[in-house]
Length: 129
Image (cartoon, rainbow, N blue to C red):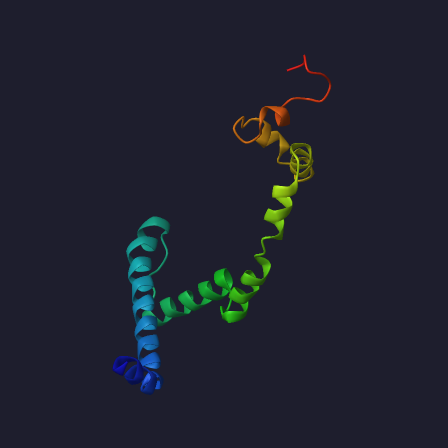
């Protein structure tokens, strides 16, 4: 319990220090990788640490958004098991119609293990296969 109290008490010192260390590490790694690969592969110029840090921040914004808890909590809200319950209550014909609506039918018909025999057969007649 003593460690938790220590970390909680000094969190305003530790978090900025670790954040600055992480930024320094990521900026350095990006700079080293860029200067090692890009000039030889594509004929680009080398970059400084601050340019690498700016590139890291720009890529973070463009490819993963600004982050935050709102994004994660939104994912949790969308994950419900009502779809699974619906699927379990469907009969094979309803499942096949569900796939047809989503244009998975052509792909799924090639997979014999995904549907039972009654799902794959056409409804035209028992002799037709």
